[in-house]
Structures are given as C-alpha cells and as structure tokens.
Image 1 (cartoon, rainbow, N blue to C red):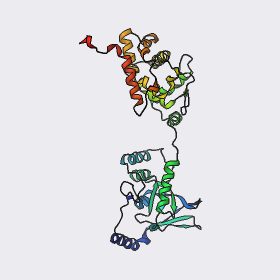
Image 2 (image 1 turned 180 degrees about the horizontal axis):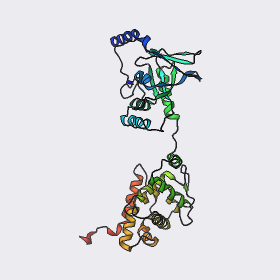
Image 3 (image 1 turned 60 degrees about the vertical axis):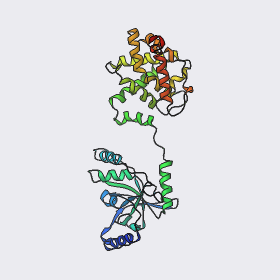
Image 4 (image 1 turned 90 degrees about the vertical axis):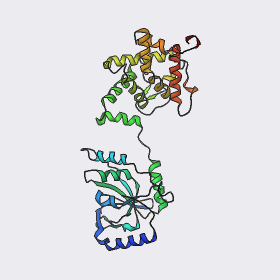
Length: 345
C-alpha cells in the first residue's frame, strides 16, 4: 500500500505509459456481490492480500492537506493487528472500504457475478481500514481480505464517506466489553476477581454499594462497572491487600467503603465516579495509617482516619484535573495531623 504523492506532469505521463504496456498481464477477477445503495454502486468480495495491498493508496491529511483525509499511519497498531491475525482462532470479519479509481478500470460482469480490475498502483483509495490492510500485509499468513469497493466516487464524496464512517459509528461502551470478557473466556485473573467483588458488593446487605452498581453504562445514582474496576483494580494490587486471601480482601474493602460512607456529609458522593475513584487512590495510605495508629484496619480504625474527608464536596472541583485535585484535598485532610508548623522548627 502506498502513500500518495502529487506527481509532476512528466512523471504522470511516464507512469501511464508503463501501465498501458503491461496492463493485460495485471487483470484478475473475483466473485462479488453488487449492491446499489442510495445512488452508489459498491461490491462486496474477498481478495488475496497480495492482490490488493500493492495497489491500494492512502492520502494522509498531514502530507497533503489539500486533498488528503486519512489519519497518520501507526506502525504499532498495524503490527498488533498482524499478530492478532497470526493467532489461531482469531479473525476480523469487518470489510476494508476502498474506492476504485479510474486507473483500476473496474468492471463488474452481471453474467459471471465477478469484478475485475487492473493491478496498477493507485487502483484503489482506502476510505476505511488502512491499519487493518497493513495488518493483513504484515501477517505471516496470506489471508484473503474482505473488502467493500465503491465505484465512481469523486474526492469530495470519498472524504464525506470517510467522515460518515468515522463519526456515525458508536463504539461499544467499555463497561459492556468488560462484562463480555467473562463469556468470551478472556478475563485475566485480576478481572475475574474484580467481577466477583463487584457482584458481591452489589448484593451484600452490609455494603453501601448494594443495588448502586450497574454492569452497563452509568446512570444517575449508579456507579458503572468500568469506574468500579478502575478504582478497585488499584486497591487489590496494593501492598496492603495483595498478600491477603480473597475473603479477607473483601472484608477490608467492605470496611473501607463503610467507613467512607459513614463519614460523608453527602452520601450520594460515594457512587459518583470522580469521588469514588479519588477515595480509592488513598486506600493504601488510609490502611497503613490506621494500622500504624490503631494497630487495626477494622471499621472503627478506618473511620478515625477518613472522618476528616467527609465534608469535602466533589462539586467544589472542576476542570480536567478535577480528580487529582480532589485526591490532594483528601490527602491533605487525612495527613493534617502531620503538618509542620512554626513550633516544630
């Protein structure tokens, strides 16, 4: 696959002459389904990667702002896709979207239900899937590439379709992807542990999160699985917890949640994403301080440490660094008894 450069008149003339000389040796055909959709003809087929990659071009915006519309090539992303496609059992069923250029001389035979085109550089522009096409090319297995090929598009329509493809599509929420991992059998040990904690805390009558956790997207008064995993993932890896058996880990986490909830002026803050995640950034510090001062991490010991943060309101903080400033405010309150003043010097 090539990145297009704007050729000079001489280069273009010489290139066309070379293309005409060996054009008959470059014509191949593939079974295809023709689709007419809202004034556009497109063809659905699969083509061996060696028969499409060398003849597909990308017009990156950063190299040609006047006519380019594609994003910059990311080699690491392409290599990740190649590795995925090299793994037994893995597949990508999504079409790569191409726009046939005049040089392709694309023809569809209604009799044989096949398309044919000239195998020349620049035969196709890539509208969507440049990294997938690179991944197929870099893959050690010579896959056939599923493609959808538009015919008869001008540059403006190509750019519009690029915008539509990349703006109309809505990605699957992260919380939903996390939930499906269990069914797909791709959960890590940590993810499975977090799922069990999530379910247990959502059911436990002693949990302040009972009935307040949602496995889907967050709604008013509910905390999402994605936010829960982000916060608790840090806690279960902390020095204070990771050596404990899972039942004791749960007991400590439950005590911590109950302690924070009991001291909150506004109880609803516990299930607000920023406040919940900020409170767990201090989880290890609070446990260590409770252990040092009370030789315990039971509920009463934890309450004595977090009592000073109960009046802090998330609404007092805004902007992109909101959570970090919330963490710092909590940390300053928790460690206020260790502040250095004039009498200490």
